[in-house]
Length: 78
Image (cartoon, rainbow, N blue to C red; front, side):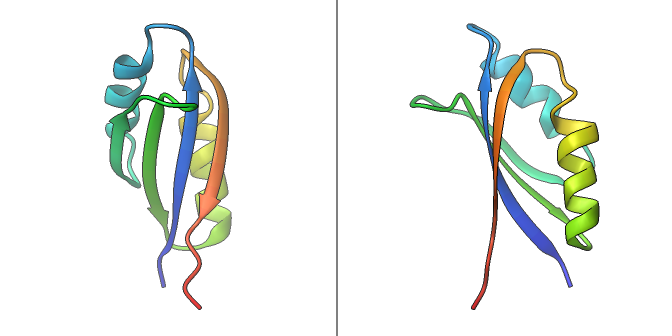
């Protein structure tokens, strides 16, 4: 089973492209795009379970320089 999520990221001014490029290199990230709107970067990530997904977000994504805020939206298939 694979758990997926979209991570919406706000960055410091002018850092969106740099943050997107750095996140794209993180194992478990399948997509990282800098965008316009209320968030600066949208990331799609996946892991084997919810615990691993949480660890990915906290230790690998949120720790990157230039990120000010994140919102994680798990994908739910009903």
